[in-house]
Image 1 (cartoon, rainbow, N blue to C red):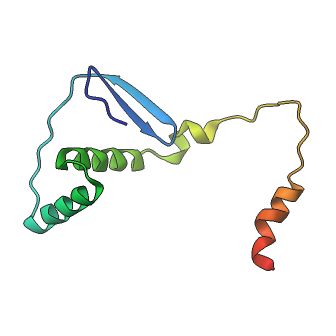
Image 2 (tube, one colour; image 1 turned 30 degrees about the horizontal axis):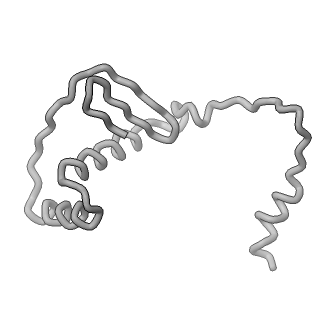
Image 3 (cartoon, one colour; image 1 turned 90 degrees about the vertical axis):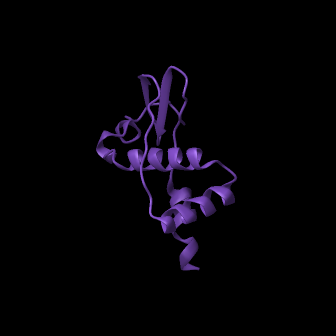
Length: 99
């Protein structure tokens, strides 16, 4: 999610970075074939070229963050006091393909 107000929010797999900056303009050149592909993609998704490029940048930036740095993978288990048994879950998940 990007926001172009005073703050820019970037969310990648529950990893949120809140940066207090003004929006920046990014320009680039594309070969005609790449631009035609971009136009088809944004038309199919019914967004503007600007929004399509913004989403592509966001996805690329998120892909650059190593999983080891993603807080989602550093969450410690929480004791809830509820007894659980994953036996039935394991059976449902892993025996399904063996039938």
